Amino acid sequence: MANIFLTRKCNLKCPYCFADEFVNKENEEFTIENFKKVVEFIKSDGTEKLGLIGGEPTIYSHFKEAIEILNADEKIKTVAVYTNGLNLDQYWDVLQNEKLCFLINCNSPKDIGKIMYEKLKNNIKKLKEVNKNFTLGINLYSKDFDYKYIFDLLKIADSHHLRFSTSLPNSTKEQTEDILAQFKEIKPLLINFWKDCIKNDISPNNDCNSIPDCLLDVEDKRLLLKITKIGNKYECSNPIISCQTCRPVVDILPNMTAVRCFGLSKYMKVSINDFKKLGRLKDYFYNNIDLYARLAYINSDCEDCKSRIYNRCGVCFTYKIHKFDKIKELVRNL
Image (cartoon, rainbow, N blue to C red; front, side, top):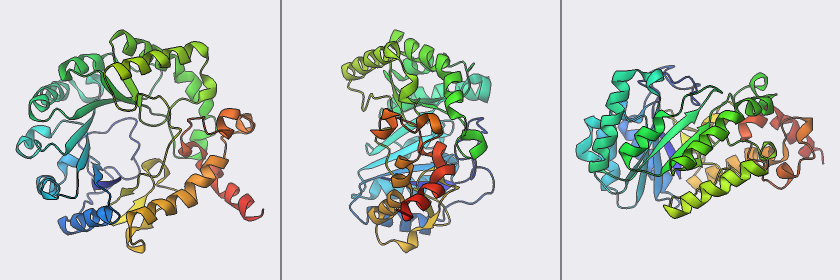
């Protein structure tokens, strides 16, 4: 899979935005010609699934035309639209195709205001009639974040599956050197969130930025077992709470450059024109980022950690970005 970054523009300014290097910095977006070229590139090695991201993809100038192109493409079997859900009502006529699925990032009424929040609720109600293939998502970004609203939205969606992310700073050395302390600070909120999900019969799936395994005790892991049982009961996809199997997804920008993911965008960008197939691009990122990230550790406390050594840590690679060059130098000198 790969994601097409349709536009840098967004209709929100989320306090936790993980694409802040790009979003709303300028009005750059894909031309429809380059959009078609990128779709062909993604299909080059038989890939049948792609994602549409931004910014906010639904405010892309050619969004309807892009959806129509993908709906008509028999080789593309799944199109994932990553959206805040506020503009979906402009496109009901083209969103009914069964190959389309949606991840709706649901912001709180405090962050987006009551009017926008009511619009979000109405769009979720309508989408349930138009295309039931959608998942709600939430980002837990501060220790006192009020997440309770999401359970009301899940009832409207008639869903027992929730995507969530623990959104902490992940771009600079200064922000990440003491990331374990930040995880410890937000852990009480996370544990309460899991308990409330269990009470509401919800299976939360951690998309990325999972809490490190070393910070979870026996009682915490019992909660995860209960969550897994809920996920199995409702046949939720991947009801697992960690990022142990992280692989390059590839986000392709309007200028035809690609990044492994937003969190690592400042570390490496490459032109897709230098690669014949998507698979070779993914391999390039894996060989130049992932291999070193698996060797790196956040600080000295992590050096001998068995969870890290056996790839059970769960810590996002972006927290190790300031160690990559040193690791590469050590490997070259072996």
